[in-house]
Image 1 (tube, rainbow, N blue to C red):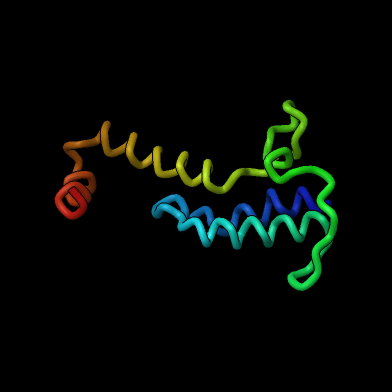
Image 2 (cartoon, one colour; image 1 turned 30 degrees about the vertical axis):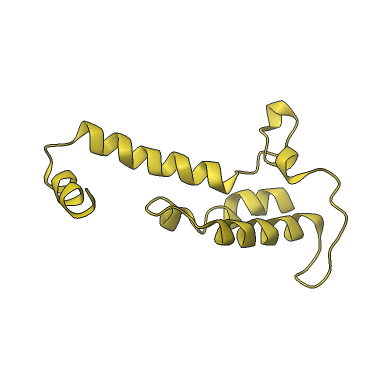
Length: 103
């Protein structure tokens, strides 16, 4: 129920933005707060008891977690994909434009 909604909806909304930009810590904190409160059944005004730590919830199911993505690690992985593409396509026009603009 709630875990599926978090994984398919709440984690999917920011993917486009976090694939291009390093997500600020305050934004990560706010998004994680929304996800945690939704998971445990609370709302923005009332806290509910968290039955496991958020770090445990973000572990894979094989490791005893719920399989929810850690947004900071996911952001780093998506940005790493761009770095990999830039490294392997240095002669392409798009790579030269980004290199000249951002160094």
